[in-house]
Image 1 (cartoon, rainbow, N blue to C red):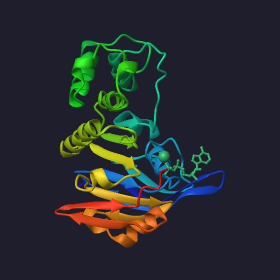
Image 2: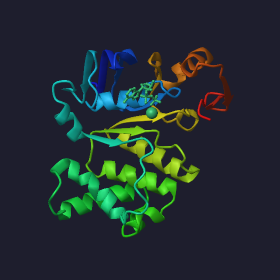
Image 3: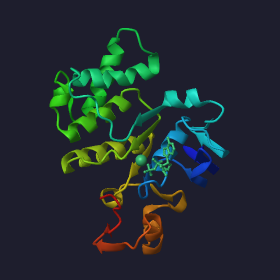
Length: 259
Ligand SMILES: Nc1ncnc2c1ncn2[C@@H]1O[C@H](COP(=O)(O)OP(=O)(O)O)[C@@H](O)[C@H]1O
Ligand SMILES: [Mg+2]
């Protein structure tokens, strides 16, 4: 089977200072990949590299069978991106539908009227995150968790083949976290690639197909039950962590390096 993502010896640097060193991994369908690691580990850098927004100084990147370095624009058309902590200015009079419909412009370009097809795709995306009743509401009136779900709907509205999400669960209430994780699992099962960055592994240990532990280098990569060793996680987080098993569920203690 063609891999969804293939990286070979990818090194990315800012002004000569490497943020990612010799990263190699391969993900196949179903491909719910969770990327975890402390602040500054290069998680956001990895997403931008997958999108072709950053150019590695060495290595090979193939996304959806496309060489990202040769065809960044082709890749970007197929990929939905939910950036980290995006704030839409609360004083902007945006409606929920305006935000979701923005996702359609990546496919067809700005400066045209939305078609019936655009509106249907946007409505369907909003339905996937359980917020179809908020279509005509002001975006700023929604809770933080609901706003994050709308931003995910915006990415889904373009029917991406691969979805990249940067800490989508940060500062999000438990209900919205569950909805988001449910949608991502469903997308992955239906053949959409999902790459989700997180600093907290706990909510997703049981859901992920692959876990990548990153600390500039690949500290661990593989199926969740293989990766979850105390040694590997401690290295990824630069400090000691404990794993507690309750029934079938593993919990990571002390692994959250955010204040
Ligand atoms: N635009 C940039 N210019 C210079 N250095 C950067 C830039 N973006 C990130 N970095 C550095 O690269 C490293 C990785 O950053 P980042 O990918 O944002 O980590 P993470 O998302 O895991 O917190 C950090 O040391 C950060 O300071
Ligand atoms: Mg980041």
